Image 1 (tube, rainbow, N blue to C red):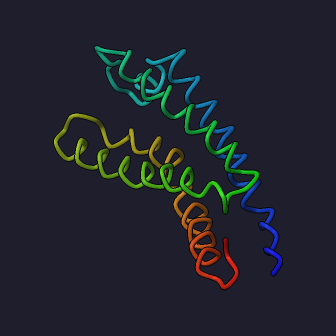
Image 2 (tube, rainbow, N blue to C red):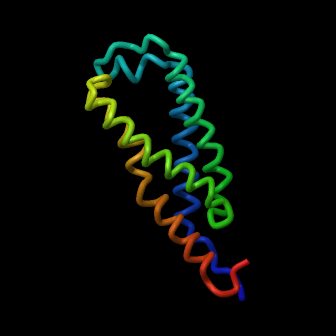
Length: 137
């Protein structure tokens, strides 16, 4: 039984996610104060922590690029990214509710996390469906 082709939108989505993450990561590493001052916040006292987050986001981008060319095989990369995109907003809400970060910082959460929920969930659903179909593996 022949494996159905991978929908083009999955590859395109993951390539866009890869590019976004690599660019965002580089921006956070090279200019750690910009996100904060741009949102009217005090720059972080420990910019290396934000730079570390930038490095992690950039590394996710490399993973998304790898997954883009066979998302059904590399679904664990998409899953790890999806989990980060779920837990990131949860952490943001908790931190904002405690008053440790301004709600305006949520604009970063929109682009880093929320916009990817549906496409990543659909990729994971497709991988799950494919793994359950007769003749898989």
